[in-house]
Image 1 (cartoon, one colour):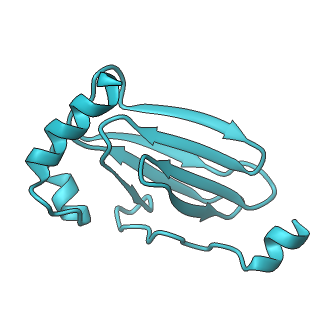
Image 2 (image 1 turned 90 degrees about the horizontal axis):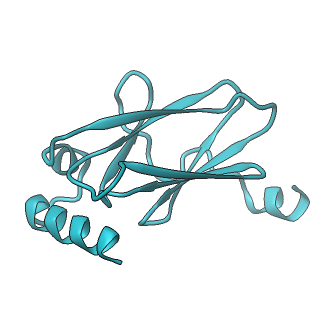
Amino acid sequence: MAQITEPLSRNMAAIDGDFSMEGIQKLGNPVPMLVENAGKGLLELWLEPFGQDYWLQPGESFIVTSYGHWSDRPFETAHEPERIQVWAASCFATVTFPDGTEVPGGHQRPRAEYYENG
């Protein structure tokens, strides 16, 4: 449990209530990770610990960057059918397009029909 609570407490104090992309980047210590959809269908990127979703079309890629401090390693990942889950161990990460612009949460989220028929 300390592996989660220690980085969270340390980074929360440093972020000083600014949860914007710029506020998170001020934590420093950036570690980027490329996430690419090399498949043929839509791929969900699920970012923890805050549970935000981002959707990648085939051939599309995002950069997930962890900021701040963590106990062991900056990321943990798990692959499920049609989803990759990324846990930012620092509790603070950004998702950007390869050009550095922020990807909005829910980006390209499919309509409800996708879930009913997919």
